[in-house]
Length: 467
Ligand SMILES: Nc1nc2c(ncn2[C@@H]2O[C@H](COP(=O)(O)OP(=O)(O)OP(=O)(O)O)[C@@H](O)[C@H]2O)c(=O)[nH]1
Ligand SMILES: [Mg+2]
Image (cartoon, rainbow, N blue to C red; front, top):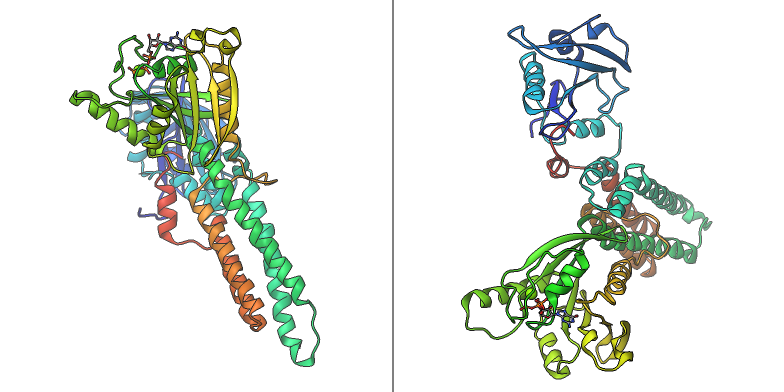
């Protein structure tokens, strides 16, 4: 991205399509002069104070009226970007918004790159990098928890925690270095056990924070759940029951589902991407075989695998089938015993959840009827419980939503690990301090104190234009 802060940039900030209103954003040193060229109102915008609204008409290069608008004037540094800026609210619709944008471009503005407004806000010190990233996350959040996590980051929760840890580590460095100055005189300001404890504490905190990314990822991307099992087990029926709509075709013929189907669903504020797949069996039919191959692929990448079988089916066959799935220890497997309504004894017709002790660990077994709906709600609760179970934040209220942040936190923790080793190997304080400083600079990457152009590009390229 070529960026010159001397450019004045413009973009439509609202989504394309028809709407009651749309906003065109203009930011940069020439904003108000460009405003004067395209806006006809009671007074020239360049004479207006910041935070004022003006009613008028946008006129294009050919002198034609484009739309009747409201223009908001912002003066540096009191704007989103920290520059002089204009926000023109016009009527929605592609033709009008493009008309206003084109008028601004013809009057000297340049089309903004994706994320350029927020990038400028960051470069002008209006927000730290973690907050700038939170803007993108907030816009793209699709569930309540994703929204909450990104809003907290936008409000600087992560930046605050990181700053606090950085100053603690810097203090420790200072103590170690002062100690270095006096060590010849045999005075020690801080004992080794104390240093050891402080470094360890900080390292563990960084590790815990990095760990919250797992949950953060769940909030941001949602949880993927794949329904697998033998043909006719009632997978599609369960898929429909969870979605509360008749989305997948259900028939008594085994092999009904050929290709997989994916839908989203929100449970307990978390977004779930649920996939119904083709039943697992040996098949001569090339279409069905391809469907089954896809079932394996889906199972491989899922967070949660729901293995559905008929409650009356043979356990050995089922376990062999489960064993053939590419499910790792990182993934959760829930066994769904379906069709309890067909059981003869009244007590067996009741839905329930069992936690069965197996050699490899505990397996959750949910007894339900996808047909009658009995037990489906309990399964939904179990799904929320399973996803929330990975909230291993252990008292952390901040959750990391960006991989970049998780990596920097991990890097910071590793440097502290090296500092601990140096300390315990009896190395001089300056070596210990050096590694602590490394950790501080890894943390600095999160808030953007230390960043390369490359990192900035990768962050802001993900933004939409106009943001
Ligand atoms: N009695 C009873 N029948 C069920 C239940 N769930 C599903 N069925 C029936 O079982 C048959 C197969 O259901 P599907 O949902 O199509 O099964 P599937 O696992 O998707 O099957 P394939 O797509 O062929 O792999 C249908 O006739 C369903 O009505 C249940 O809980 N009780
Ligand atoms: Mg099916």
